[in-house]
Length: 205
Image: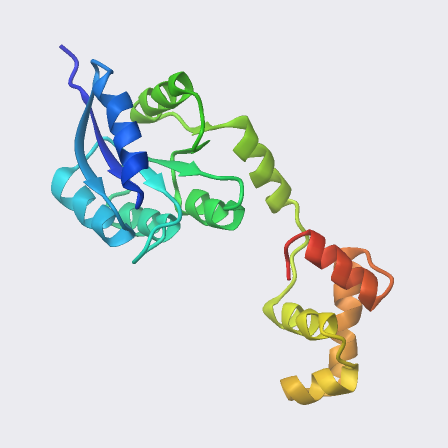
């Protein structure tokens, strides 16, 4: 007989863990081996319990899901982590997927979809729900600004002049204007106001 899939739940909400535990208990080929309520606990549980699949929430205390995912995979590259996410966590989702998570589902995915995803991930497949795939693709295509450019744009959004920004950042006004020109080019904007509006819409600032 094929061994049951050993599953670890990592979520800081007890009600969510209870719901997931009930789903797992109803499947004859799955077994819940442990639960974690924060990122640190998740990392420790993986070391102790060696689960086949980890269901990982993203927003948890101590360490978030992306940090826990990276730490787990750094010490155990074969670990299979399935992220459970909401639509407001795209940055964290990107970090978790970049760290090597095996898949991602939205938290309110149908029971059948979740169960199928657990089985697929356990077998080494990568599973990403269409909704999350769309979000990840949109984020990947988002214009990239350097930390310095984001700082300049943040001050510009507050209405500061180039001279005032230069004083705040300890650089020349010409340098500030150079950053602004690069920002305009990256965002395809014609003015500070337009650049700020685009950056705000894209979630850059």
